[in-house]
Length: 139
Length: 139
DNA sequence: AATAGACTTTGTACTCATTATATTATAACA
DNA sequence: TGTTATAATATAATGAGTACAAAGTCTATT
Image 1 (cartoon, each protein chain N blue to C red):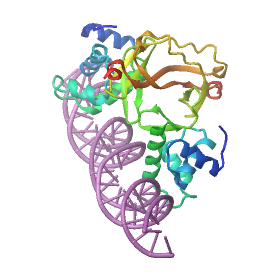
Image 2: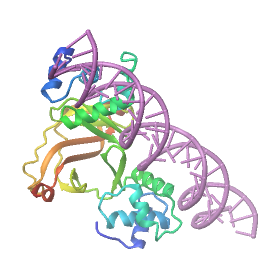
Image 3: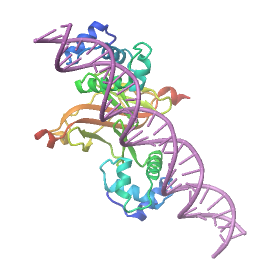
Image 4: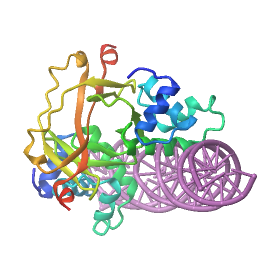
């Protein structure tokens, strides 16, 4: 899911039952173009120079809406902040304790065989690893 | 790892390079006896009536120490709080969006086959699912 | 046992991500 | 065009977690 133009994002939002606005479309485009799992604060700081009247509350409202409508996943890497990911292909995350980067890790998660989950409705699955990445391990 | 008496916990802490104190031992015992993935606040509220001078800072200090020494795992279920788990057997967690409970899920996580992780040093692996549990799904 | 030094606990004040609320702006529609 | 619904914004409030300094506790040494 690489960059989409605004017209394309507009119809994508409508498809997902979200009334489009410039703010919403640009925030979503930013997430798709920058799969760096940004926080609400980072989104705000990146887009503020362009959307000059953007408010942090709007970013929070928009992220809540996106999560509710299922077009963005919240990622809880650390306890004090939420990160967001517009990539819904099944993948996990690796957080490097040294450089702080969050890596996407392709992974197959098969939950159908877990008997404990009989009767459970699974809405999202996340896998999170931590440690040191290759670069930081080499130093 | 069911309940241990205090003497047993004392030596366990020493084994793990932690100087024992009443606060530390009781907090650890509480975690082992109550595998409900409590927050620091919940630990504080549960133990405060007994350890009458307990301070929240002590709970935070202790949890940080336990995590650093590797006898407790932090769990990031939601973005605004950290939960703690003294169970180090490999398992994942399922958070019910309806009743809020966090379930332990036995699961096998095999990361050795993931080529992306070549050269990475994995310190911890967590798997987190969300949705509705069996009880809440039936209603 | 007394003293000193190191470590632990505690209370207060603070930070900062997020939320609540109320107001203003924009879009939709009769 | 006027009216209503929805979205965006600014400000204030909340609450988990942290920083810091003072007070308490433990332990080793004399």
